[in-house]
Amino acid sequence: MESDLRHKILAGDERAAARLMRGIEDDLPEAINELRDLYGNTGKAYIVGITGSPGVGKSTLLDALIKNFRKRKLTVGVVAVDPTSPFTGGALLGDRIRMAEHALDKGVFIRSLASRGWAGGLARATLSIIHILDAMGKDIILVEAVGSGQGEVDIARLSDTTLVVLSPGAGDDIQMMKAGILETADIFIINKADKDGAEILKIQMEQILNLASKPGDIWKSPIILTTAINGTGIEDLAKLIFKHQQYLISSKKIQERRDERAKLELIEAVEHSLRTRVNEILKDKTFQELTKALASKQIDPYSAAEIVMKETLKRKK
Amino acid sequence: MESDLRHKILAGDERAAARLMRGIEDDLPEAINELRDLYGNTGKAYIVGITGSPGVGKSTLLDALIKNFRKRKLTVGVVAVDPTSPFTGGALLGDRIRMAEHALDKGVFIRSLASRGWAGGLARATLSIIHILDAMGKDIILVEAVGSGQGEVDIARLSDTTLVVLSPGAGDDIQMMKAGILETADIFIINKADKDGAEILKIQMEQILNLASKPGDIWKSPIILTTAINGTGIEDLAKLIFKHQQYLISSKKIQERRDERAKLELIEAVEHSLRTRVNEILKDKTFQELTKALASKQIDPYSAAEIVMKETLKRKK
Image (cartoon, rainbow over all chains, first blue to last red; front, side, top):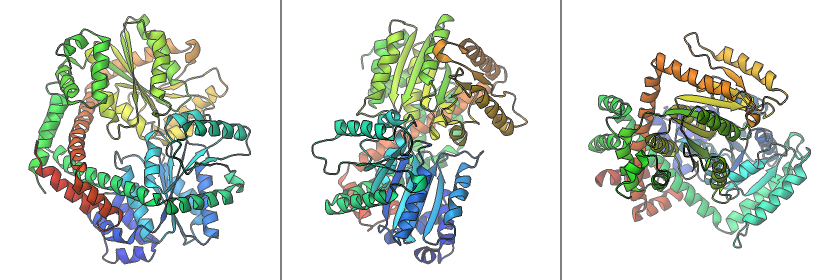
């Protein structure tokens, strides 16, 4: 890394930021060191998570929100966590399409993160990108991820405000409820509200939310109808996001959320450190032999793991 | 655990098996010890993974396949990995519905596994349940999971034969391709083939598969049309599964897959051991203070992680 990378990023330099982000994705130790130095310059951005099943219009909604925030003279960073394949190169394509419209706007920086290959470390990678965008001086950071069981829970843990997007006829409403998003959404969005079934979906959602609400809840997660493709409802949505931000600040809950995020980040960093250590051990000959013994049922996985652990603990850095 | 648990499980006792499975889910050390003892009695079952988006009819297909295997006098174990919420209790309901039909059949044992709360350890939990079903003497073990990015990849790594289920009009065909399932599917199923669009979807799939195929591929993943609800195509599907099994055996690729699985299992067991150790540390007062320091940006997550790591390594078991 170049020595003035930090200053360039703090000045909002996009090329420098992209460079550090690549370094983080490639897990380069010097990139992690740069990020450590930047950490003290973070904590100013407001983080909004957007999740929902494929096809509900998350990307269109994201675009509409970016435009709205830009009109308010707020700068925007985006992290899109996409399920992608090296074969289709989905993340890159998505980047290109989304970038096109905002490419010339210095107030917007968009980064896609492939969800594969990050086994267990996706939250850490996403948090790292968020920190870099934060250090660049972005006012609002939008984090987009496909909702899929464990996925959403993570988004909610990373975000100040979590938006959950549904759409009529997507047939996933009940599926989404199963996935446990009720507990994590701050604002529900029914997008494609010009389609049949939007009002019915809203009524169903209200019933489910009434059943799920607890007496102590002060913030009752509202349900808003939008048609992102033509901008309908986006101004109201933006206002709701700022209303939720005000609620978090006045109730001091924002600190609770940020403590939770710090806790998550510490756990992720510890697991990263452990994984790095384990990966070193696993490259060894001992490990190759262990795998063969395991495949032929000569040893059980837990006994094999104990052997690896003993090795790991022996080798202090 | 009762001392004769192992013998009961080896004799196919369902109550004993369910008891050990609960112990594994609750992460009880004595359950893990029982599993270690059982490990030498595993490796006989054939493992078939079934994945696909919500709504393509995976459960109906699973039911139809169970019936087909039972007609062949094969015993069947099922692990269903469901995205579920403590609020809706989805897994339990799913269990009840599926169990109803096969409840009186001693040749079938079904177990649901909630996908939440297993952060990073879902593969380990699934493998553990597979081993118990295997030790019970089940001939075929079906592993069902919702396809969602990283999800499928895991299923393929756990299975001998991986089935990917699509359906016309589910609108998820392109999404599925993005999620990188091409590389992992051994057999593609277009279910609900009586619906409009099944043949078109098949042609699209064939085109995509032709583009993706590599010169060295001997097994060209076939695409089969089924209507699971009335049994159409199920006998042909079962035959294809056995054909793939024969291919894996004759090409010796079955050993490669099982070595891969052993490797995955060792990594999972090592991570479990590390996580147990880290969790102990994280309960400490030091950790609470670290989190606060982190939230107020007095320390960066990597420096904080180093402190935790030093503690972890100091305390040998």
